[in-house]
Length: 461
Image (cartoon, rainbow, N blue to C red; front, side):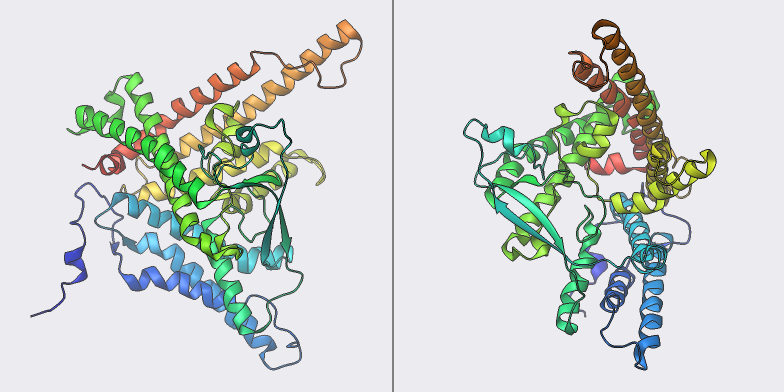
């Protein structure tokens, strides 16, 4: 008789509403650990070795490194196509995100960046120098520049000027390589960590929250939002959708409320996880592993456009993926189609490319919990619609600025600068616009999640 119970008896029972891809099997520890471990071994060999150009290992090391990286990428991409998590729709969905993101990150780090752009990631060190607040500066106003959580309130933290310096050289010795590889592998948490890519900070003048700040935010702000949004999701699902009724049978008002509750739940859940890990790793400071860039950098009520929401009001955990596989190809395509030179901005291709890549990533994850691609394109329509909305709002903004500048020239004879072009109602219109776009287009997201069983699982049913 077995002394210890088997792993399967310790796990929750399989969910009847999970519709995994045909041919996939329950995930076990070995295939879950193999991709990141192989990736780590490849990272150990990524930085150049000193004085090896004439040694016999000069050709062996690149071959071994690329072989390990290729194997890791294949294992990452294989995860959602061969495995599922039988007791959770949400974890199966996240397995697809991890597999796709991890595989794309490996290809970027070992093949795209080094061979196309001659760029090998280097260690980045962050320094925080205390800065003095002006006597007339309200504490809360200054702290707006740093929001690792949307509702982070300064308490024991301090105002700092943040600088990031990149190592000029490469790791020396295996001990340094071990640390370097671990830091870079954990950069898969995103937000530009140890990468010379666009970050989410947008400012060097920031606020460094303390453990007390983050704990206060979790207890006073994040958990109440999480609980209230969860209660709304559970009530709507229990009252109207538990019997299998489709999302579209809900009155439009309830569709929008459920969509808003799902968004608030996700936002607060991301914040909870982000701050929890930041608290756990804070004792490692000033080591880079303790550094957690802000997850969100603006409060919801400060946003005045769809572009603002996606630039400052939402997390950027997939920013590198969208940059490499969406933004850059989109810019290249626009220049090819329009004949624009490289130095000229290709904003339409940039925006649409980023949103199209996001549409694919999320639809791919949805299809792994819906048994196929049928019904899995709600996320795609959501992100594609938001991309079009950003292009439209930018066109309207440019047209309005030109008109107001013309009006200014007619009145004063000088309309070159931007002074006096804003109107008191611009912010009101902008806020109504982005909220309507997010909620109306977000119904596509909510519809797919109801059909996939994700909303039922979130509701605890």
